[in-house]
Amino acid sequence: MINWLQAPKSQDVAKYIECYWLIEKCPSVESYQYPKLNPDPSAHLIISPSNQAYDYGMDLGTVDGHGSHLLFPHLQTFQLDHSKPFIHLGVKFRVGALYSLGFPLYSHSMLDVIEEINLANLFYSNESNVNELDENKLIEVARSDSELCRNQLDTLFLPWLGNCKEDQHSRLTRKVLQLLDASPISKLGNMLFCSQRTLERSFSRVTGLTLKQCQTMNKLEEMLEYLYQRSANEIDWVEVAFEFGFSDQPHLIRHLKKQIGLTPKSYANERGLTIDVYGGVRSSLAKTSTIAIPTN
Image 1 (cartoon, rainbow, N blue to C red):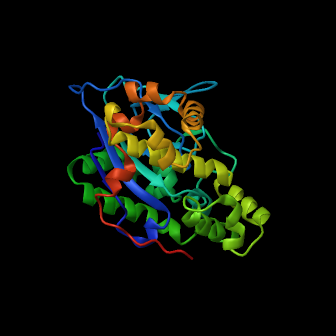
Image 2 (cartoon, one colour; image 1 turned 90 degrees about the vertical axis):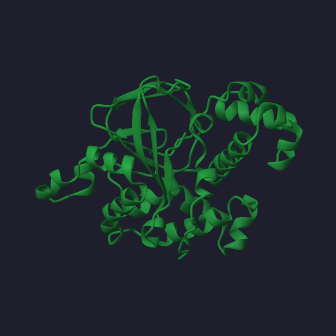
Image 3 (cartoon, rainbow, N blue to C red; image 1 turned 180 degrees about the vertical axis):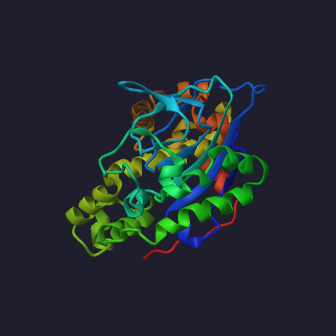
């Protein structure tokens, strides 16, 4: 399960980062060896020991490497190789945050991409400071003190905030994200006093996603959190279809098959997604204190 999850303490950082998390699989632990990672509109920075391997199974093959890496927003469901012990310290960015932060390697069209990251080069442009950041030391702090680790990560990210690119597109996208899960897409333009075309173009420019793609992934994550908290014999799929806005049960079946490659019955029996193996981010965040996020 998730060892811990912390929201940023700094409100300035929380504007761009949803949470920090730590997952560790020890040698003595038996768990699902090849869990699947469902689609996600958010990017994640995965901080790992430099000699630790990672492996993401994708539609067109496998992406593998060692050490820290950046997982961009992804429409695909990835299969992970967690057959060996590992530790990951993660940073979950808010949707569209990489646009404002001016993240290295980022362009709005980068979806379903995993890139290796050198943490020292990422956080320090001054070569004299390159050796000041050691992912192994950061991970050891994460193992022993989650709040101290959160504070250190806040400190690392704060200098970036002075160079953030906040323009009309990022501001409009932030407003859209506050309404997207509760409102029909067709009404968002009128609600935000702009044309639907302007809204769609700004959102795509910032996130690389369409409004529909982002809304669909958000609904999927919310539904998986709901299912995670229930055993297979407690799930009424007709009720689930109604609860999450599907026209009927066949509509829900088609949706899950497309998004995670499984029918509802197969999913309920297998429970092979990362949320089932390690726990859900939303449910874990609900146990932490709430931080107000600036809207402008």
